[in-house]
Image (cartoon, rainbow, N blue to C red):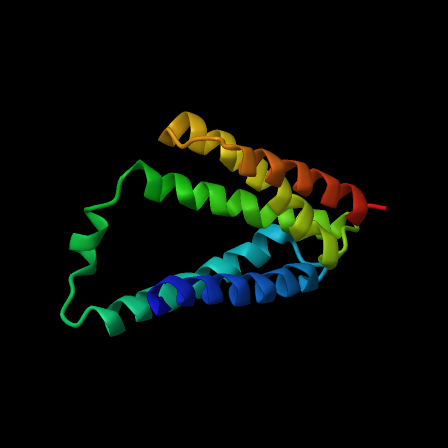
Length: 141
C-alpha cells in the first residue's frame, strides 16, 4: 500500500509548492529567463539524483533509451509552466486555477483513456464529470 500512496504524497506536496512558486515569480522578470533558471536547477537536481540512486550507472547509456515521449514531455512541461505562470499573471487565484484546470484535465483524460487506451466510460465516470462541471460552477461563483 505504501508504494501506492507515497507517489501521490509527492505529487500533492510538489504541486502545492509548485503553485505557490509559480504565483510568486516576480512580475518584472522575463518568464523565459525564470524558466531557464528553473530548468537549470531541475537539471542539476535530476543529475545528482541519478548518481545517488544509480551507483555506477552510465547516464549516457540511459540517454540512449530516450524516445519521442522524453522529448515531447520537455516541450509539454514548458507549456504547462507557461500556462500557469501567465494565468497567475492574468489574475487567476491560487485557490481556483489548479482546481479549474484539473477538472478540465480530468474530463479530457477520460476521452484520452477511451480513445488511446481502450478504457471504458461507465456511469460513475459520467457522474464524476457532471460533479466536476457543477463544482466549477460553484468555484467560479
